[in-house]
Image (cartoon, rainbow, N blue to C red; front, top):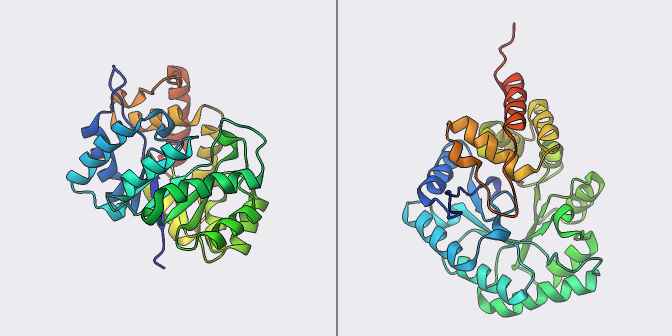
Length: 293
């Protein structure tokens, strides 16, 4: 099994009408790949994927593939509640040969059981039929309000070999991450919280899907590929987490590229304030651009 490496959780640019700006999205994907990312994850949490419909996804994916990004360099996030919609969006991407599907559990219903989650995933895979392959199940309880337990992962992988091939763990719960790495070392375990990334890789993690890679790809790549600690990245993530993360990442991209169009988010999200933008920029400069005396 080839190493997964670093996938940028690609942020999605919108114009003043809320439409995806495809040329900006393509350029960001290519910049990220050139900067050390091995793939781009489209329509994930940082990419506001739950706000992007099936037809839009098809247009954007087609444009990125037509621009020369290879299918094996693409992961597609699926963040919906209906098993039918999840299968449609996943199948659409798998038909185009993408590397993986990042599949989140349903999030509307709260306090659901492992049994209920197992049945939901089973329904998605049944609807996908022969298309089903290379699914990374997405543990992000801060959004979904449910944790994909270690026993649930075991049950899914046993029931669907070759289909459930990995986990993206964005729970920020280090003991949970350790348990996944210990019990499922032959799966692709991706560390979604950069604060735990280097340590997780040293324990056998396969890499990361990272929003910070949108503007600090070389630094995150060293953590994801080599398990190299970088206190600067950790400190920056701590600062980013004080604010709505997706608008904060977009603010950093806008600053790095000198293009305020990147500040736009799609409702119900709102862009962060100018003061917060400046604050984050100052933190970034202090960490990454201050030369040693």
